[in-house]
Length: 75
Image (cartoon, rainbow, N blue to C red; front, side, top):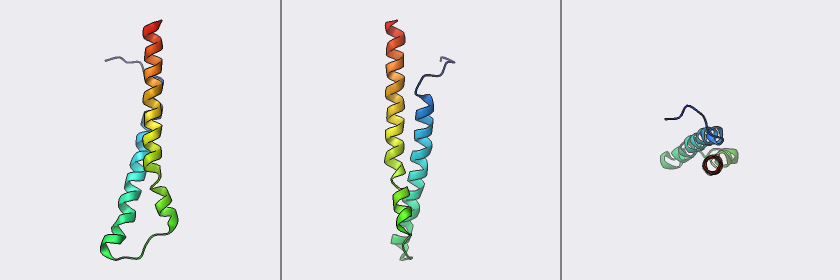
């Protein structure tokens, strides 16, 4: 394994954290629906949108890493 970090590693890590926060928010907002509890405010449902945002952030990091690796191979 290489000890060097690639260009998109930070984006992939940040995307994973954002995705995890969105996943937890999704689980938390669906729990009241199953147990008949009062619903959360609308902002809780907007926090759930962090899940696809984290996915896109990680995907951008992967693409950035692939481009950097392709440039290194070409050089």
